[in-house]
Length: 280
Image 1: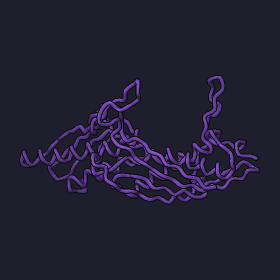
Image 2 (image 1 turned 120 degrees about the vertical axis):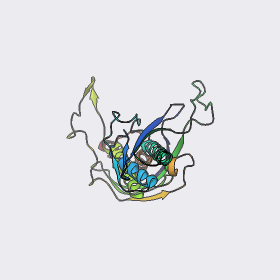
Image 3 (image 1 turned 60 degrees about the vertical axis):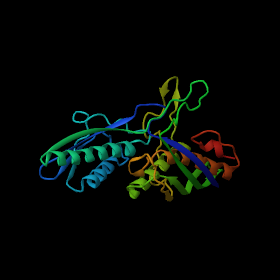
């Protein structure tokens, strides 16, 4: 069966939330630099983004990332809402530029500068009508489209995802390899939701207490993923870059189930799709 899905995800915190990120840059007398950011690295690659931004802005590879802790720098906010690339890049960029200006002003020596970055202001939705009350409720949106091919054995209730093709609006891909890795990872999470991941409870007790029972997709479950990056720089984002991890998670589940509906002719109105949902 072949299925399609199109979806979008808001980037950063929305609806009037005061979203900010802090970065601190220390320029040493020997020309090297230390960057402090509390941004949490959870596999999304923000450490690489911070290093890339700092080395670009400072014009040197002699950049060290300090341990990620709010003991030495202000909060970076959470690693969520596809916000970390946007917010950390903005904070580090501003701190680097301020540090260079301060070093020029004082004529050299060590410089220690901390800066707070905030994305453009958003406004809350009207609680009665659900409509926007100001210029915008969201900072930006990221759009993803997917085509999925699946094979379904209706006798055994088994499904295999054969191929995924996706095009995604990523703003500017400042690290294309990392961007593609995020899209592949998000697709894997969506596959898990579509076919296997389910937390079952009974009378408030979790019945799947370990990963023996709670199944996660592995590399053996992942099909080839053909990715087309649609690069249109986001005007308000640092370097024009958007977060990319969540949109493929939103879209891939729907695309997989769409393909399974085509293959089986069944409505399949819940996820994950269980074997007995597709057995004829």
